Image 1 (tube, rainbow, N blue to C red):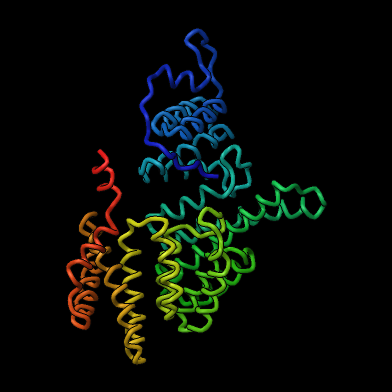
Image 2: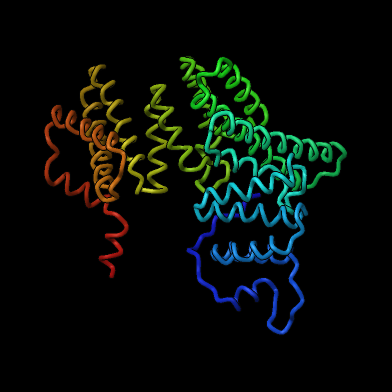
Length: 386
């Protein structure tokens, strides 16, 4: 598995601290084994000491025999560390060296084997398209092999609860990988003759591998939208929502924040505005600093109001547009505060507000003040406390 992103900012340690972390001593000249150095590097990463973790991993690589499991472990870790540091070229170089040692991902994950390096290289690919697909497919093959091994153990009645949990995680990761390939065929490789057929096959397999994984149904819905099969897209999105909408935010089955932002856009595309708003309200409850979420909420409410207006539901449409104005004003407030770079989003939000103002008149001054007070940012609160 890839190292967890550190929760704290990197801290500077002296050489003595690095030596102690590696298990060394100024009174002991015996070389520290590469395995110990990598373990120490992992510990430093968990503590948020990214640079020191990299230093220890480099020492581990220097002390490893070329092509050995020790070298694989150090190379894989250095690749992940450089991803943490944002040095993608260096990360790619280390991971490619790791692939040369573990070409099919069959070595044990404890020494840097497994699918992770392939999946990282797919995302790091400079060429994209077929090159990304190739790496994703290598990762998928490694995942399938690992899943098959665990299923064989389970079939012999030797499985444990830990293995069952691991099997579920691997199936979800495989489904996510298959969906990633489908997304490449919907974008970079959409011109390929068999693109639609590949998307169909990949998303179908993903839903079979992990039917309880919300993102697979979301990707299937995206494919159905591209095929103009909107009723099927609605069914897939409903299935995706039902898997997590009643769960607590911390439940691991709840898709991550960006996935749910993408979900809200898909819901809007198939005219499921009410469901989109429910998703966006939940997102705002988790993070009220997202410009895009406020924008999408305001836009959804605006579209809902348009439909109500067409159906002569006078009071309903006004209520929707008043709410839309609140969301859009907060969107533009954060847009300015954060120097947000999406000009088209900002212009569209202003256009929607202008249309609302033309229909309902400008918002009363006291209403604007109330809205601003209601959405004051956290930094302002901290400044007042100081």
